[in-house]
Amino acid sequence: MIYSLYYANISENYPVHWSDYLGPKRKMEETWWDGSKYIGDEREGEMHGQGIFTQMDGTKYVGLFKNGLRHGYGTYTWPDGSEYIGEWLDNEENGPGIYTQADGEVFDGFWENGEFLYSEEISPTEDEDEMEEAGAGSGFYVSNSGHIITNYHVIDRCEKISIHLNGEFFDAVTIATDVKNDLALLKTSIAPDHVFALSDESSYPLQDIIVAGFPHADDLSSAVKFTQGIVSSIAGAGNNLSQIQIDAAINAGNSGGPILDSLGNVIGVTVSSFDEMQATNFGVKAKVVRRLMKRNKVSIAVPNTKKISKKNLSRIVADGTVHIVCWD
Image 1 (spheres, rainbow, N blue to C red):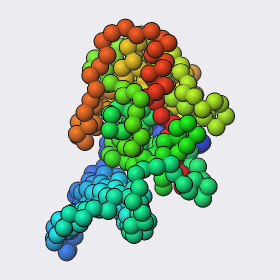
Image 2 (image 1 turned 135 degrees about the horizontal axis):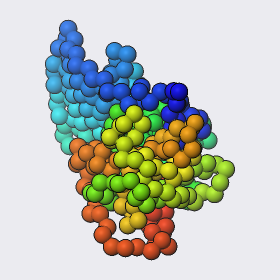
Image 3 (image 1 turned 90 degrees about the vertical axis):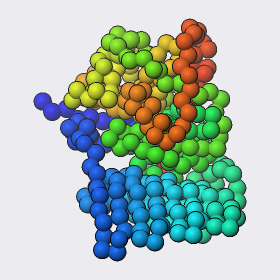
Image 4 (image 1 turned 90 degrees about the horizontal axis):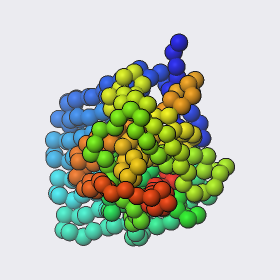
């Protein structure tokens, strides 16, 4: 029998065969006739995912691409030293970003179609009424600077990413992705009430776990939800050693949320489940998250070693887990 792997995210499921999902990340390295060069991820022969594009005159872009175009978070540097760091859409600056001219003048604010609109700190999003919610998932804070970990498939199709807090929406931007392991690193200006630490110990079968997230957020309450279970296996679907298998219940909207040990340390990130098999769910191991954070120079909190009551644990987990909304 061939089982289908489903992402535990948003308003629709995306069935894929596990061998496709776990397949090697495709890389591309190409130099064109004019001397421009690309090194990075590709899809169907086009720049797609994380990559670096350079031109002969010294122009350089490091960031995300979609279907051959700059799309998502990235840094663009011009030959004169001027630089833009922020969000892109179809090769143009769109969303929150910072442009620094060669003479040092800074334009920090929001952009649309390559034009600077206004200067403002990341604030409650004002145009949700003009956009449609494409889905939602979960995430969790990993730094006091506002860095958030979630699944790549939660934010892959988003034109805009928001953090939903206390009835308001706040913008978030994509800093980096790990498509192979289905991870994304986001950033928002909203300071966290709690920062999760990543466990530095290996998981083991029968280890007690807690899963936190925002399943069915439109139908249930807006509060974070908890389920409990154990680690069923230290390998995921297809013997994927970057994952763990768990039996704690997960549902649509749980994707990207933390899997925690009894001390409140993250041992994994909820990612997917087999719909044909009960209590067969998967998470990306904390060590994989650690590598993504280190590559992007994000400080990692020291794991907790002291026992904590369930009451206090539920409080701090609720403070550090976020509801992520995807707009198109």
